Amino acid sequence: MTLDQLMDIPGALAAFTYSDKGDLTDHRVREGTEITPQVLDLLAHSCVANMAVATLEARGWENVTGQKGFEPLQGFSMVGLEWSAVVNGRCGVIVKNRDVNYETAFEAIHACAAA
Amino acid sequence: MHIVKQLMAIPGVIAAGEFAYRGDRFSFEGALTAEFARMASILCRSNTMSVNMQSEIFDSFAENCGCRPVQGWIVRGSHATVCNIGNYFAFIENRPELLNDVMTIMRAKIGDLGDDLLMNLYAKIGGDVKEALY
Image (cartoon, rainbow over all chains, first blue to last red; front, side, top):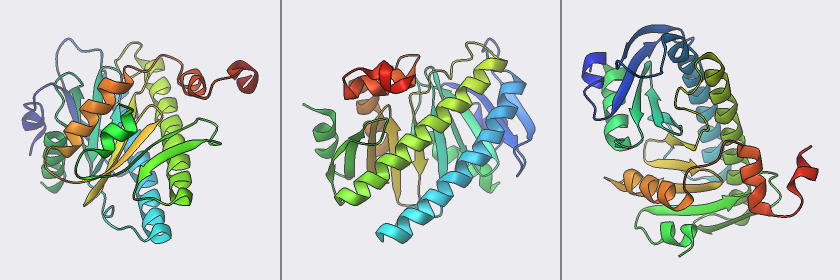
């Protein structure tokens, strides 16, 4: 799935890809939003960090509790006041909370990461 | 109905709970032991503070960009998902539409969090929250 296809998700405000280190490699931003490439770059870095921390937590949780079903992680979402960022692999999409369908977003991001 | 009970009434919700910011209190229902619920509360509180800090950094670069204050976060696992809104959390199975249903209920029941997450979380505990904070 391409960035342009990610932008077709209902309510999508921005879509982006990033490197393993979190540097922004490509992006699309819907006209009229307050989201800037600089914010996307910071967001991409936080995505890498949050996925790493979540993996640590999932691995630890499974080991300590014996409850399985978390690893491998399928993504992370930060729910902001007006929009949610959904990320996995090296792809991310920002979707308006009013229109967000988290399952669709996670599936789309999964497809983007696998492409 | 209390939000935790309402969440637990949904098929596929494994456990749900509420935690206090300081970590000294939590409550839960579902398939967790008290010790695991305590661990989950610490984990959720830590992640909540982390994403809140990140959003403040984003906001410093683009004021009113729409992320702040952070309402919560989701960790999507291969077969289970952890949802956190404010100081409530839910462990759920990955069933079709369950994540959307749980998030809709959590957002609707908890409402929009205010601008000061710390104060908001402390307010749930009660007492002289400012003395504890500053």
